[in-house]
Length: 250
Image (cartoon, rainbow, N blue to C red; front, side, top):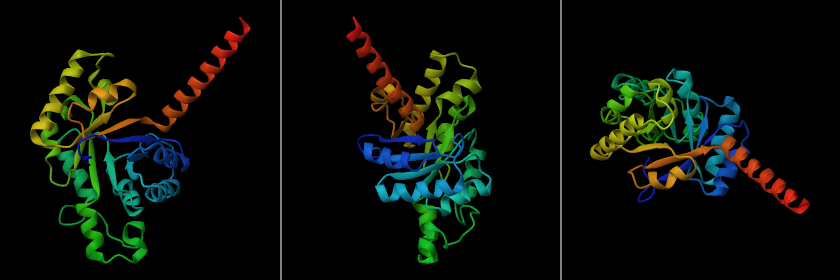
């Protein structure tokens, strides 16, 4: 999941509304991550979002809740371009993610060309299998101190395409206070290891944090969520309207 000279930009989709994907595409985002870990999105809506994203020219990823076969099989059969897999803390867990996401010989993913990923039965089996192993992107989320310490080894696991540093879970699991310099140092060290090991890496980049991160070797950035964008936009509108009204009353 690399984007050339500039990082690719995406957003979480947490609202169970396919229109969120369409709006992100119109805004110019490169990819959307349909959030099945923290968002209340059912499988039917997820499938619709994936199809709509492809029609709108935005790349659809799904953040799955875990590595159970059911967690990964449905979004992949529905045509997701890749998966974000949370809470990968070791090489062993990264290998397990590969095992359930990839077809043999890399893994044990079940095969069926009858879904969108197999062009509803039209795709030759060989093409379907090669796309699943060569084109579907597996992004593993490193969200703990042990994970950051092993980030290069995790990213080098065959079948893993990129790592994603999750700062919120890292802060919670490591009990780092807000603005922790120790946590910042751990992240900077992980960034350097990814750069040195040529491991594609991404993270969350809300607000004014995005610009400096673009110069620190990140290949992709998630600029918040549809819920955040709606909340911030609504807040700005109400604040501006009330400020104007108060000014007129003076």
